[in-house]
Amino acid sequence: MFRNIDNESVTVEVGEDVYALFNTFELEDLALMNEFDRHAEHSELGEQELARRAEIVHGLTYEEIARIEKCKYQAIQYSIRSAIKKLKNYLAKKI
Image (tube, rainbow, N blue to C red; front, side):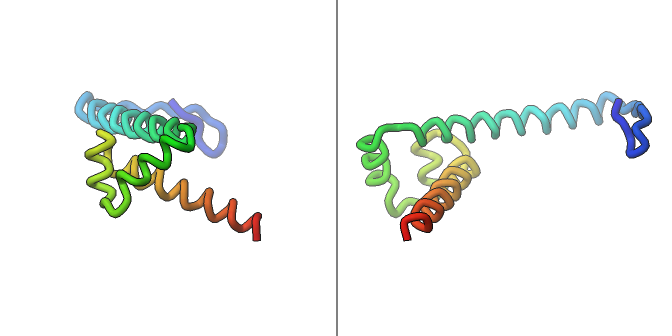
């Protein structure tokens, strides 16, 4: 059930096959979000640990880093893009 633009309740019935497919998509989304969260927690690591990890992954591809970290490529890509954005914002404030 959902509400349409006129705030009317609308109910849609779907077959088991469609429900199962949507359920699979939702579970995959949750798994990916959990991996992103796991990587976000890494951002709170100490400076020494971050420096050690940077030395290990320097020059590696996202796929290679993902294999080392035992997570998906997308989680690594998200973490790196997030770090670059934070660095840019930090440096922009310093200039």
